[in-house]
Image (cartoon, rainbow, N blue to C red; front, side):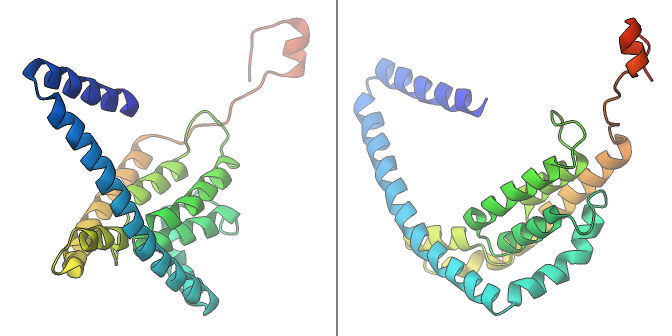
Length: 213
């Protein structure tokens, strides 16, 4: 659906430019946008490499393990239907730790692994479980202590104080995460967990009956 929306915007802009005789401006904006995208990407690489290196140092020093243990009680409260010793819990805590430092690109692989592990607990592979929905909601809102990516973008565009958004980012993400958790809890209470699909008894299949247990 998102692809169709972007396609509509592109086609509409080109058609409008052709009608109004401003095709040169659209072409120039497209090239400038591509140039800005490359510039910002290279700037992000440097800041992300720095923070990923800091994360690796923290991992080797055992700081991430301590942070994961500190998040453990909250994670178990948010994911009551996931067994405590299941591998998904470790990936969820690692994902949340990376998001706390604004490392979206570093958090993505751990989030994908967490979803894959949660899928193993899913009785209906075609439908997302409550735990999957909770993880998606937390990733969307994610409390962020250091908005690394935004700071890098502001640095690339010559901000006088690129880190001044830290306080407002923390406040905004706390409110967003609280809202996401509240909505998740509300839907969990409103929608009962889906029961696993029930298969017919062998005897029913043998006689060709339509009764199911």
